[in-house]
Image (spheres, rainbow, N blue to C red):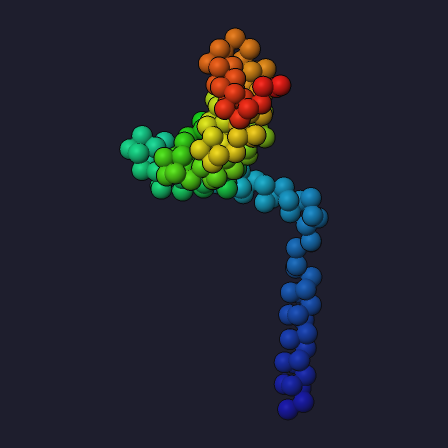
Length: 171
């Protein structure tokens, strides 16, 4: 009786030793980060083109709610790095059509972190400020645009009209 009990305990002991010895070594934090990055990149390679196509199709069909969802998912996955101009411009315009100029402003400011010299994004931002009644920010953005596009007379006319409407003749 003791020998069977001893055999069972010995067998359990031997199995537990093998199980603990067969454990894989712990990966370093850098290795874990590289593995996670590789997983994310492989998902992005498949999903980004699909999401870009879907969001563009929603935009083309004037389905603003789904356009916003599509471009939102694109930015969440980091797919906006591939073509930031298209993503942020159409994302912001969809918000504008929904009358959500504050959201459009947020999207445009995020897009300008990637493309600070982009004239189209800056023009949309000035328009967003205009719709929100943020005259000072609109003036600043139009002023910035005059430096980016010194030959664009329309921007200068719009800025001078805005200064006149606000009574800021010294500027």
